[in-house]
Amino acid sequence: MAETIHKPAAGLVLVTGADGLLGANVTRALLARGREVRALVQPGSGATTLDGLEIEIASADLRDPVAVAAAAAGAQG
Image (cartoon, rainbow, N blue to C red):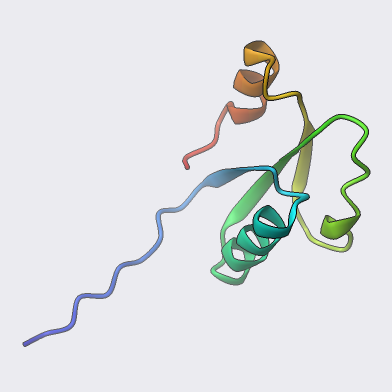
């Protein structure tokens, strides 16, 4: 039986909570798979867990649907 290999979809991925423990690891895993990442972080968080990563950082409060929609614009996943 042939093995099915799934290739990740191309395009930008938005990671919410990217400056937290889980989000930072998800961000790194996506980058390792060649994905482009936009990290959504809380305003004023500093996002030091993401230092040195080639990502776009968007700052928005999750309770602000307009800001979240703006951060998600153009994201594929």
